Length: 123
Image (tube, rainbow, N blue to C red; front, top):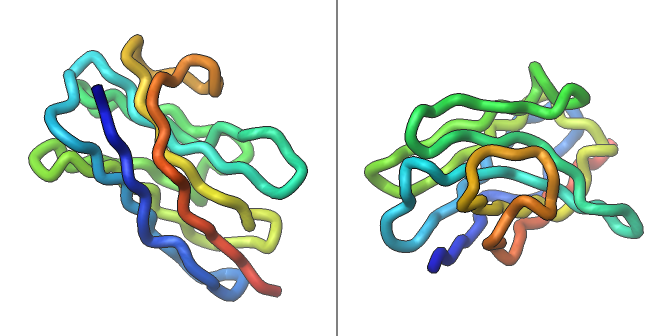
């Protein structure tokens, strides 16, 4: 059983950077995938990036590749999302998920979710 808690969101101006954190309770198995998703008002949840807890292999959505980078700290049980060159269209609730079956880019693959953290980018 996994509990996730996101933090680091806030209000930033376009072009700025922000780093989100996802703190996971207990020990995460090496076979798990950890992912970031975002959901804007009136839109479906969108995949951002995922990382293998064991290998560190990453998978980034094409639309955000180069601007967003996922990383992890296995000792602290934290998954990070470094966001740069933020745009108003990046405004959304960003959620952290854990997938028992491994890394994936679809929402239905994930078993656990955090409560989300709001990122608002002003123009």
